[in-house]
Amino acid sequence: MLRIVLLLVFVVALVVFVPRLLSRSAAPAEGSNAPDFTLPSEEGSAVSLKDYRGKWVVLYFYPKDQTPGCSREAHNFQVDQPKFDERNAVVLGVSLDSVDSHKKFCAKEGLNFKLLSDTGHTVTDSYGSLTNLGLVKFAARHTFLIDPAGKVAKAYTAVDPLKHSVEVLAELDRLQKKLPAAP
Image 1 (cartoon, rainbow, N blue to C red):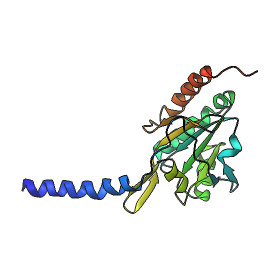
Image 2 (image 1 turned 45 degrees about the vertical axis):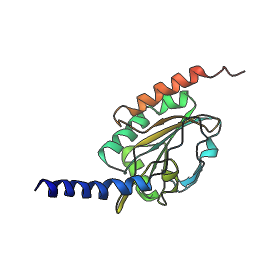
Image 3 (image 1 turned 90 degrees about the vertical axis):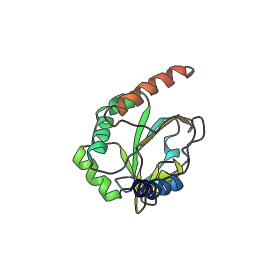
Image 4 (image 1 turned 60 degrees about the vertical axis):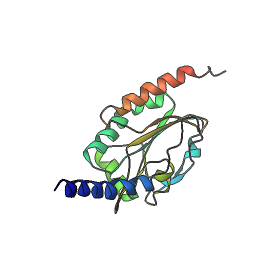
């Protein structure tokens, strides 16, 4: 009986974790160039990372529109928008949801920052944030803080959606204190 239980646990682990491990690319390392991308926003317009050179970018990946944790995380980023503006930072959310889904999510939650649709999974994968559970794929809850020169300043791979916005603001403050003063 114990052998059967152990075999069952082993098989479940293989089915759940091996595809996930095989499908995920490595996340870009802190200090490396952030992978460039162009994705459609909830408005249908193309958004590229290079459009934000000279600004800090909070690029956050999330699993699904209109789910409790994702709604809370988006709401917190929305409430803190003036604080991000003060720090010369823009927030961009990315999931595998469609442009139409993002449009509905923004309308329902009152979001005025851009949500980007990665239905082809390429950008999510290039940031090491694609999770594959067999037939179900979604973006892992990861965030990359990208500096004005386009380098990854901080990578978050363990995110608590309830306090993440405040955490990112504190890191922005810390990083901006380290930079030399502008002439």
